[in-house]
Length: 115
Length: 113
Image (cartoon, rainbow over the protein chains, first blue to last red):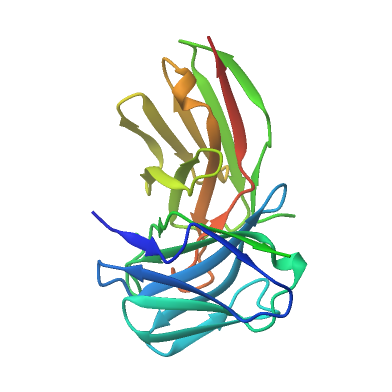
């Protein structure tokens, strides 16, 4: 079974802090994704990565950056946290390029509160 | 027009009934279709996928795909209170190199005893 883990289930940070959210998958997937989910807005893609050191902006990249130094790990960075970044953050992974059967497997999520 | 559309609900059905959840998509070249279940406060969990026109059954769940009508549905037979959740439809569009999923906003299902 695919296992996607996230570093924290709950996180409370102060405005202006730099925040790191980490995600690890154990199935050698090429693709990894970061979403945020807010009531009434659904899942919104922040960034995704299709290979080590490769990244692509999603629908809402402003205020975020990402890092993928190793295939199994994908980090989301909030450079200077703001209250409007309070949200549920979900990491996902999928098999990768060349496969049309790219179902995504999600981690448990990190509920981030920025005060 | 949104790329993947679902009725937000709530869809309320009595225990034991059939719940029917519907989804339409805009990219005619879409190849792969998924249904995820998400309980409140939890992450989405894949429950069904379908790639070919027609029906696909897995236990109490049946996914139906009609590419000509750009329509995919999920039927849940013998609905149970534990099926109460938000159901997300997701599509891999032709554009995007088969890497990204486009999610609908989800339909909330409430099964009452």
